[in-house]
Length: 130
Image (cartoon, rainbow, N blue to C red; front, side, top):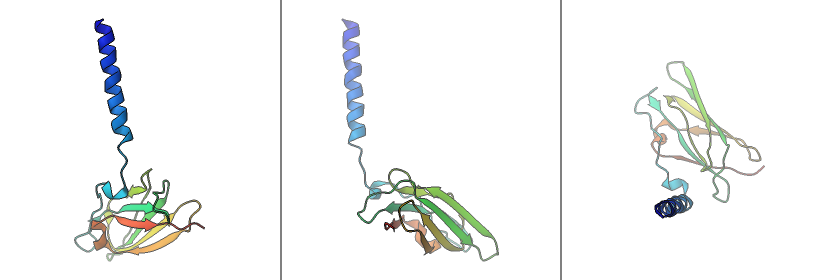
């Protein structure tokens, strides 16, 4: 009898965890910001990008590369791909003049100029079908 009660409690616990996982749907605005704006020329910053299609749906597998031409003559770059939520957080790098390259299968490529001071908030990018 004791084994039956323990088994029943185990099943109820698993069902509760499954219900929590299913109800955990979030929009891109619910995801904490991981971006960081540079506070000085050639300072360190990090891009947090939120990528969606024309209908506002997150796009997975988008390649983002941030290129930084620094005032001291150095060139830095970092890159990453978006996850299921359309979010990509790039590794930190020294910020200079920034150019963001965005590529995704089935969508038009984009090259965007980005201000280092704007990276304190997530950068929202909308993709357009080819």
